[in-house]
Length: 426
Image 1 (tube, rainbow, N blue to C red):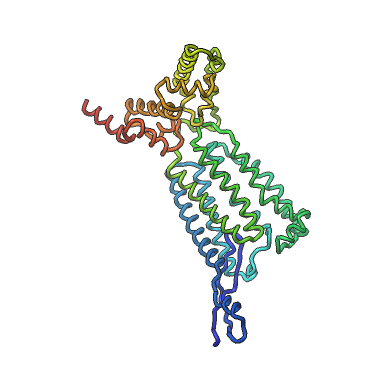
Image 2: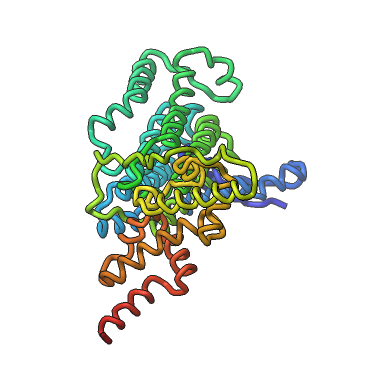
């Protein structure tokens, strides 16, 4: 029996996955001349890698394109540069992937894919990821970025990139396997490529420790830090997948790519609040809270009566702190910060909170913030509820809405409607 097969010639490129694009040629398979295993292998014209790679790359182009459209639309409604940066990142990701598909289909020179640690892949990869880097910077410090600061941020990468480009014209080591990478790692043109692949890690660490002004930043810190951490993991998978051509590292890289895309969209569409125009100032410095209480209460201990006195004093201090907007409006205020401000310890702080009628620190701080929102809406029901959430110290729409509903028993919109009806009735 002779089978006439169309067997795909594998074309590989480096951006997203080790994609196998079928370009067919004809062969004859005879069961009399070939072993069973080899004949079955040839009959299986689409391998698992081919199917997975093709599917994921197609999904990548579609998802990144849709995400770019959403963020451009969001930016057009609210002029926020962070949304512009992330929209450009999504767009360039989709265009780069599509461009590599076209190159692989049209240029026979790419039939065997890029070389390991290909300088083009490394340099273009960082250029795209730099747009992702700008997103958390702009969220943490609105309007802080300018041409001079961007150039300063890029200067280490520019120096290394120019050095590699010059070296490439003099001598570039062609690498075809991981063993060759390890064998020639001491050569400058090799370790420079490795260094340029991992140069994003110092930028990511800098973002994790970056100081910002909470009064003019809408950053929901846990979510932004999650985006940065996923991106740091993507640096490793990019090196293994795109640099060393390891297939399953490419798959993991694509999974992380989808995860960071979904996370950013969720933050922008469901979590993040817009900074009120009155608070947008890159030079604003939040106040340092110093209430200057006479002495620390945590050192006092003894009889039950003395303990009661300490609890009462601590409760008075906490009540005083809760009257200071610079305390309770701070979205990053923790119970440890409150303990430091009032000069006590965790035990007395918790007992004092109970003495004030609250079960926990979160209940107390959220009650104070919701009280502010209620008072503001009573004074003017026409106020922007999103701005009030922000002013009260929230950086998440879902958290603000949930806490308001839990404490008042109605949603902010219902509360506003009832106030308007009361005014009209009056």
